[in-house]
Image 1 (spheres, rainbow, N blue to C red):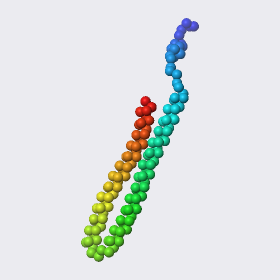
Image 2: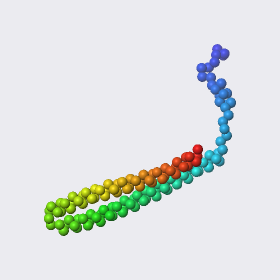
Image 3: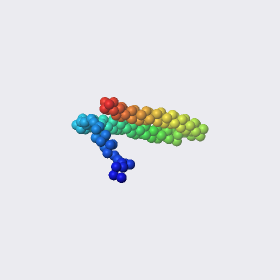
Image 4: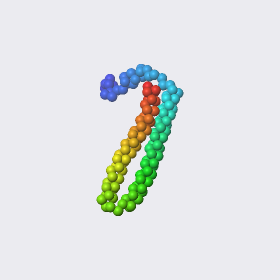
Length: 131
């Protein structure tokens, strides 16, 4: 029985793994690469945040403009005595408001896309540099 091999004898595997030669790791180079990765990520976040701030500023401008237009439109409608003319004004106002809203949505979505693409460009450049 002493001559029987164990079914899970890893001696040969351990010997073969010991014979493998792995390249040495330059830890300083690895740390420098990681620092560059973190710097690129920080830059990407900064670019994205700047784009997001521009979007928020634009949304505030749009809201202020919309409130001013609504106040002016309500003043105009209060002056109208003819019900048919008032209804036509409301319809025209609703139509123009809807068209402006679609334009604003398009503008904001394009700005958000640009902000995301600009941030992604920073990360892509670092990834390419890393390869």
